[in-house]
Amino acid sequence: MPTTRFRWITIGLVVSLIVINYIDRSAVSFAVRPLQDEFGISTTQYGAISSAFAVGYMVFTFLSGFLVDRFGPRRVLLTAIVLFSLATALIPLAGGFAGLLLIRMVLGVGEAPALPGATRLVSSWLPPREQGLALSLIGGVAVSGSLLIGGPLLTQLIGLTGWRGMFWVMGCVGVVWALLAFWLLRNTPGQSPYAGDRERAHIAGGRGNTSDALPRVANQGGLLANWNLWLVAIGFFSWGFMFWGFMFWLPEYFQRTHGLSIESVGAFSIAPWAAGVLGALLGGVLVDRRYARTGNPRTRLTIIGCAMLAAGAALIPVLTTSSLTVALIFISIGVGCGFITAGIWFVAAIDAAPGRPASAAGFVDAAFALAGIIAPSIMGFVVDRTGTFTSGFVLMSCLAAASALLLLLTGTNPRQAAATAPAPSNAASGD
Image (tube, rainbow, N blue to C red; front, side):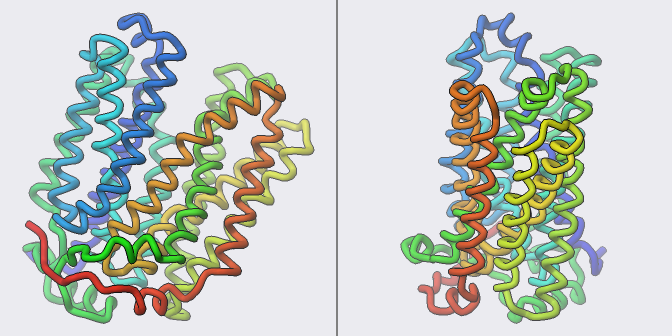
């Protein structure tokens, strides 16, 4: 029966997809020793397997934006989750290093369309004044929340089903999501039998138009010439450098710098990601309220810039203290401030290229994925050469500050810039 709130069921589906996505990609880190014992994988080879995921993800997150804009998010996301769920389930059957390398790359390819597809759905299903909160739930709360619950969930699954069963259960979870999405998910409100007329009017009125078509991309060159989109991509890379640096190296930092045991590291690592959940929620509420008050999408770049400045500044006390408490507090503040921006990057991408939101999201998410390849390696190089994390934290802080200043000082009104860009053709696509 048609309702006036079905758009939030759609957003809930997307949030759950991102949670599954991030838990699946991290599952292999909880089975390192069994994989090494089963397939004779060395530590160096395991590093290459991890990089294979990031390479597949980076390349296809850029390409998947074009696919989502061309074929619609429903078709692409259903294909993607079946692909990455199958890849997850095949990990115990890989047979050796080459098989694991290939499967992890396929996993990266399959997970790449998630955020571009999510951005396309938010653009179609929500008016602009509701997009900030939704994308903060998707790009912030779902990501940081999955890091909070993923460890306990996966370790419990290993205890109940064994390490192989853990991968097979997660593969089945993806298939269940695909069945629900096949039933409930549609590209636009106009294609959904569950969205009522009042809800469709609310969404279309908020967008200032009544078109339900999915535009196809006619000029990708115009996308790459979009200065605001480049600003968002540079900023997202800078935040990604901090995010991936902490994701891969925070436990080692606590052990090496503050002498914590591995058991204690797990408890202390909770605080930064909990701060990330709070920061993402704050960012979503703040960006929607500012837009509702001013109607100016430029405020989104301002909020990102201020949050990135705060995130970079928060790391300064970490460089000058030997206190674990002080370090934990300010790392958590830095991560929390960074996560304020988590969903706003994709809102800003929509602002920069409103006719091609998935392509724009794929472009900026590729920059974030690139940081996921570079940051862990640079942090490891710095620690090997210096014996401390100081230079790595300095680089995080400087990148955050530089990108913030670019956003604050050189960004233009995205709506005015988009109005002068070449318009894509308006041929509909969808299923």
